[in-house]
Length: 180
Ligand SMILES: [Mg+2]
Ligand SMILES: [Zn+2]
Image 1 (cartoon, rainbow, N blue to C red):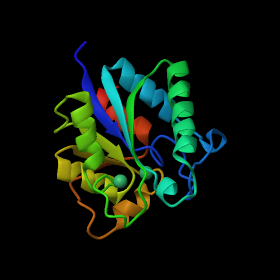
Image 2: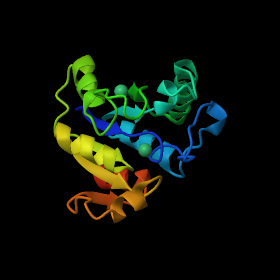
Image 3: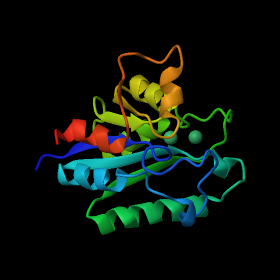
C-alpha cells in the first residue's frame, strides 16, 4: 500500500483540551471517535505525525518526562486499537521564547520532514487553532480545522481564512480524507 503522511495537532484534536495542560496520562481523554479515526487513518495507509506545542515544559509546569509519558500513553492506546502514530514532535518552549518551532512557526514540520526524510508539502494538517492553520499554510500543507478544542472560536475570528475546510471533529475530517 502506498504510504501517505498526515500531520495532527494533539490537544483539542485527539484528546480533550482541558484549557490547561495535560501533564499526566490520567488527564488524557480521547475525544469521542478520535481513537477510531486514527486507527482508520492507519488502515487507510496514512503515517501519522503529531506536532504539538507544549509550553508547559518551558514554563516549568511539567517536565519533558511527564509530557513524554502522556504521549507514550496516547501511542499505546492507539496501538491497542490497531493504529499507529509514526512520530510525535513537541515544541517545549514557552510562548514568546522566540523559538522557531512553536506553531504558528514551522519548525516542527521542518524537523519532521528532515527526520523522516520525506517531502511533507501538500499533506493534510488537522488542527483546532489558528496557529495550526497558519503553520500548515506557511509550510505548504493543507490545513483542515476541527471544531473541537479551540476550533469553533478559531473559525469565528474575522481573519480566519475562509478557504479552510472545517469539520465537526477528527472523525468527520478522517471520513472526508479516506472517503468513508
Ligand atoms: Mg490544539
Ligand atoms: Zn519551540
